[in-house]
Length: 386
Image (cartoon, rainbow, N blue to C red):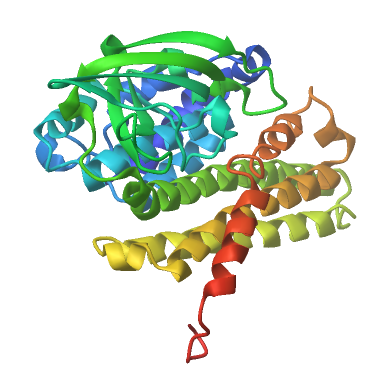
């Protein structure tokens, strides 16, 4: 989809940036930015062209997430989370008439998708569910105590994980597309956080009823391994890259202003700027490499479910979530009090607070523990690059 990142940059600079302070201060949904994204037809970017969408690549979408996050991290993150859900439908539900119609509606009506994959009873483990799909003829009901549904009040469709049947084990899950008309949301917890405040990641009790056709055809375990987790880690990393890029941009502007004040000298803070820029380039290289790995593996469930691929995607998330903090820290040290204050053009307080969420979203310790367990049973490869 040509021009996606250009359109996202325009929305980011012209709309998201204008309202970013208010979105952060009031912990409110960035409605102005999403009205602009809808006007630009960007919510259907990943939907295939034959269904009315933009037919964008993952690289295109990651670039758009990056462009939006440079101006408002909450806007970039919500856009990223929406596209993760669209990617699951595009990759795994096009054989289903109901879901093909939903994809066409996403493109035509610019529907916003959210997800309900965590439950209070499972402690945030998305690969286990307590709630279950209860079939009644050709219809179903389900009730989920969701610990988090980001921007739930603003979403038009929510993709909900649940056990396949009430008798299924907790890991035998399906994904159900629930429209706003299908469900009732009762808020159970609020979202008064340090950063990413505009994602409005409240907790809800969700009750839904609909047609069994709304259940996606592939087991959630397969969708998670092949699409949800790798796409999540890539687009989230693109968001964090956007935060880091804007922090470096502000630090660079500060150093240039200092250099103009004292011609012929190099400001001492330039060293920290160089360190921040180096880390930023490392982040960028990591994200681009991961996108390339995903593109090469796409279409091959065998490659997408290998341990080496899963490890690469997991370590991408861990590495970029740590690097964004390092970049922002060095940018603040570059700008000194001008970066520490909230009332200067170089202020980096919001960047620092938003970046703190990175290591907590699918906790790094959980990812590394899972990776370590997998590596313990992996056989050594026979070549130097295996």
